[in-house]
Each structure stands twice: as structure tokens, then as C-alpha cells.
Length: 110
Image (cartoon, rainbow, N blue to C red; front, top):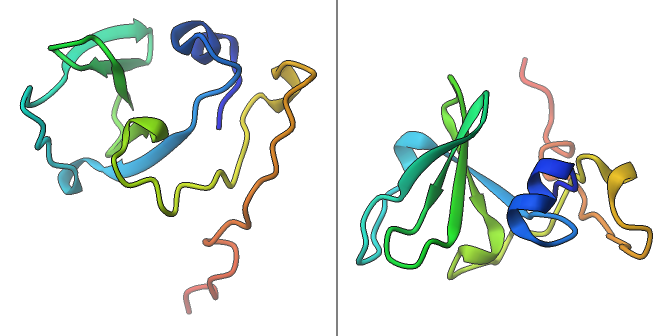
């Protein structure tokens, strides 16, 4: 989740739920194909549905990860938030219970 000023202004909501995918592991299967891209911040670009304009994804410059808006996914299983960036900037009435981070329970590599 993110409640920074940039995300809340773009989304029109108190936070955005992001789900990360490796660029090579993400395939655009919808009827509109790949999103239309716009630079909305000096270090990232965002993808919008070319048909309806829905904000779908965000990619930071040089990153191999595509961040997809969680509620744009058909299957939202496994998308419980494990972190909340800029939580101190969230509206005071927002109360988020974070899920345990699945990466934190993994044993360290030898």
C-alpha cells in the first residue's frame, strides 16, 4: 500500500494497493493489449488502459518490476498488503491491518 501525496492524487483514494510482477513474467491479455504509457513523475512511468483510461501499472526507471494496481486484477488472492509506504501521511481515519510478510518467514540463503 502507498499513501504518498503522488499516489493519492492520481488514484483519488487514501492509498493504492500495489502488486509487483517481474517484467518478463507479465503478459497483457486484455482486448486492449499493452497499456498506453505516460511519465507522471521524473523517475517513473504509468500505464493506462487505452480503451477506458483506467490506471493499471507503474514502472520505475531501470526497474525489472512492474507494479500493478491490486484492484485492477481479476484474481486478487494473495494480495493482502504486507507494507504501507507513507503511512504517516494516510488520512487519520484509515486503519490498515498488514498481513505477515511471506518473504520474512523464508530461511536465509546459505
